[in-house]
Length: 128
Image (cartoon, rainbow, N blue to C red):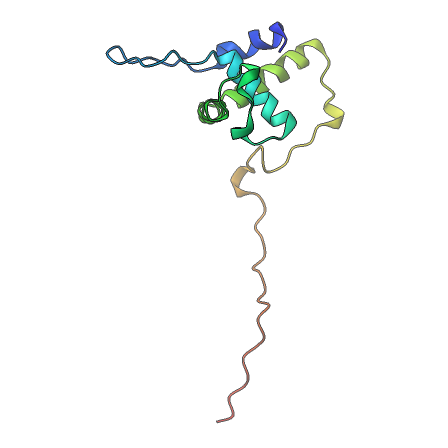
């Protein structure tokens, strides 16, 4: 991974505190974990098949770090940082931008939907 990309990501990562009394093993370096995460996402292999010979740690370690970073909002903040940099540089093409409901919630709930019609057959008329 390029150093300039790591310099953008590193400040966004949450700090992990070690227990003072029983600290356990030293945690794997965040940069190595990120490289393992990117390797799994790029190749599409399963987490448990991540080769430890590559030095990224176990697949479960990388998966846990991805889970924790996702919960901490690291990816949303990184997205904002990169968009801001592109906008300042004038390299952001707004003519090709798309916004949908998965990224921004409609204000005031958006348009109201019509009530869905039932697809069940109508009950038979009473013969009594």
